Length: 291
Image 1 (cartoon, rainbow, N blue to C red):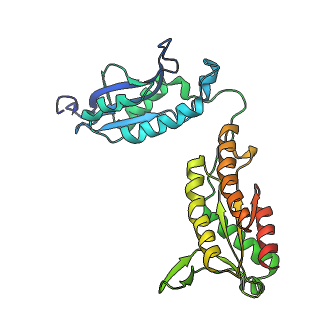
Image 2: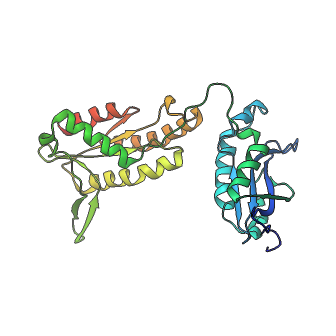
Image 3: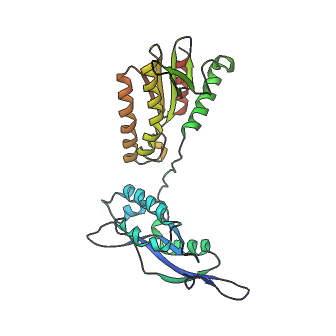
C-alpha cells in the first residue's frame, strides 16, 4: 500500500492517494447508479468513508423506492466500511444495491479535506431539498426521560412529599423457595398503597431500538408481577409523534412494538400509560404513584 499514499516533498506537503465513489442502484432493472458517498485509502490501507445521511432527494427521481429502507442499509454499510482495511472492500459487495466505482488518484492537505471536497462535488443527492426542511429527530433516552419526569413530579407534589415516591436504587426482592434475590428497576414506589412502577422511553429512531428499550422494563414488571402479589404495577412510556421528525412508517412500527408489549401487560392487570408529551407523562405518573 506504500505506493498508494505518499507525501510530496517541499514546504507544501500534499497527501496523495486513491479514492472511489460509493454508488447506489435504486432500481436493479434499469441499473442506474446514484453517488451516495466517497471513500479513500490512507497510507496503511485503511478506508475512510463519507456517506450521505439523508437520501430524501431520491424521491425526486424515483417515486416507488423505499428511501427509509435504503437509508438503514447504507447506515449499516458505512459502519462496516469506515475504518476497514482495503482488502475487505470486496466483502462489502455483499450489500445489495451498493457498489464502488473505479479507483482514481487524488491529493490534498488531509484526508478530511479531500473527503469533504470530493463528497461535496460528487454527491449532490446529499444536499438538502430547497423545500421545507424536515425536522431533525432527536432521541430521548430513558435516563433523560426519567430525570425530567422525576423533576416534574417533585415540582407538582413538592420536594418533601415526592421523596417517598421516587427511589434511585434498584429494589431487591427475595425469590421464595429459591434462596435467591433479584434486583428490579422500579423507581416509582408508594409503600402506603402498595404501588410500584417504571418509566421507559420509546422515543428512538427505530422500532428495534424501542424494543431494546422496552425489554428490561417489561421484564422487571413481569418479574414483580410473579413475586410481589400485593403490588399494583404501572408502566409509563413516552412514544414519538408526528412532530418528532420521524417518518409515518417508522412511527407505525414503533407504535406496533409498544402496543404489543402494552397489551400483554394490561392482560396481567398492569396499568400502562402511553403519552407523546413529557408533561402529560409527568402528570400521569405523578397522579398514579400518589394515589
